[in-house]
View 1 (spheres, helix red, strand yellow):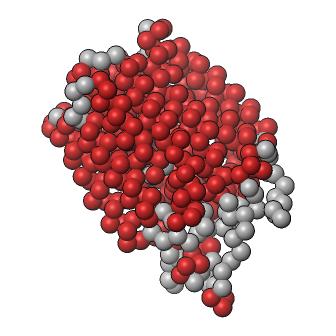
View 2 (cartoon, helix red, strand yellow; view 1 turned 135 degrees about the vertical axis):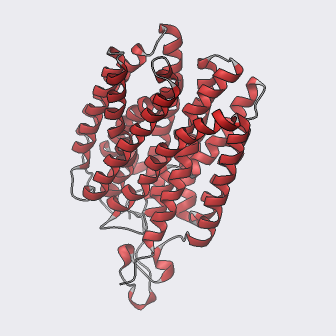
Length: 405
């Protein structure tokens, strides 16, 4: 039996997620620690550059979603690989404070093109029945990136130095992504005579592609607004913690234990994503999100209140179970509740709000840490915000789908 071409698209999206998350999301924690340690610049100052990274990505996401829907993902992913490589190579060679912000600005451009939004928009035309599974499988790359990214970057910096490690990482990003994107990525299944999920397209026609929702109409629904608010809060505290995870753990654990803890956190994210991939198309995704957010809040509270190394590691592992699903569930919910036709425009707009909130995360932790003298205050506030997000996501529901005239 011939495998549907859409699963090849999923495979490329998985690789893109590995690269984007290893060098972007999870890599920022390593860059923050390395820059503070080697340059002696304040944590809050460097955290501001990482906030710029997420802010840049947020402002570009609406254009990324629309561009992929209009011209396909191939040029977007290639551009993302180039920008990520340039930004990562630059961050290892900075010697002036302003250069930190330039490096993370360029990296933010790359992250927008390799983000969950970009991958979910790439996959939206290819799947209907199995859309939850496809997005979840592609998102496994984020967990793999977390498992290998930070430990390998830390090992490389210890053995080769900061500049050599980032240059090598940039080269790997280009070698992996550019050929795959060029050779494999296609815009939609209709272009190769198929419908979503691999159904043959009778008579060589095309499926209806008229949007069910305009962006403005979708933004007026409680369904989309609750997604934006809940996942904005959840991603803000999640990504902010991941940015500071290495620095937070360094006050209690040594380098080997830090690497193991970061890897274990990513392994738990991988396990939770595997479970979601299996059941994504059968579960109530909003209730699942609420459960994930309560679990994350418990992990933050344990980290804030206890300093035992073993309990600290356990709390990070518990938190790890939530990482992948907080990232993955938002596009699945929007895709299910609003459909595929205008997913790129709708989720691109939602992603801007989510990423703008996410951009606050690194500075949220960094500034509160500098003001309070530790991480307990930001962690406790993070737990409270996750509970608020839990309440918000349960307030929403599937909107009535009506065709535009």
